[in-house]
Amino acid sequence: MTSGMYLGEIVRQILIDLTKHGLLFRGQISESLRTRGIFETKFLSHIESDRLALLQVRRILQQLGLDSTCDDSIIVKEVCGAVSKRAAQLCGAGLAAIVEKKRENRNLEHLKITVGVDGTLFKLHPQ
Image 1 (cartoon, rainbow, N blue to C red):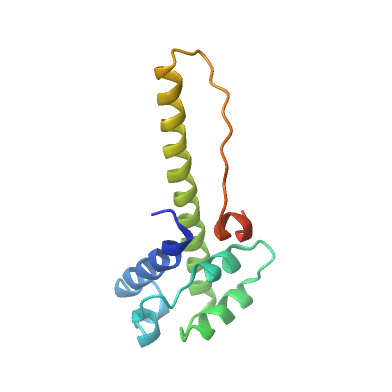
Image 2: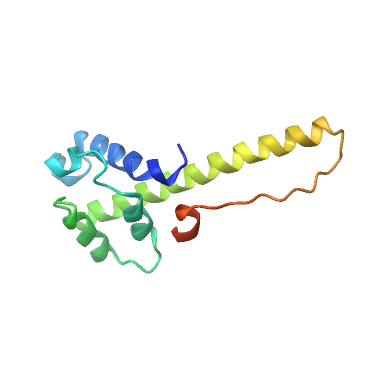
């Protein structure tokens, strides 16, 4: 699951799990957090922006109906970073495997290749 279509939902599922374990939002799962699709990938991109202060992260969470503390904002920012990094690493691993297989099939020591990338996540995500 590396597409921008899924990353926000993956973050939401992780936030629910952390909340169930009492690590976020005072252990209270709000109705908005239960709502599928509420945490859009654009929020993940905004939260990961280096110039976004924790107060702004908290404001985004409040817009989503999540009563958060400063500690919650820190954890949410970490979750967003981990999900983004995981998606990038999965994409990279898949591409590397394909390129390596092509190199082996052609019996080459080195393979020069160009990879094209497109999509909103690629264009708008801060990292």
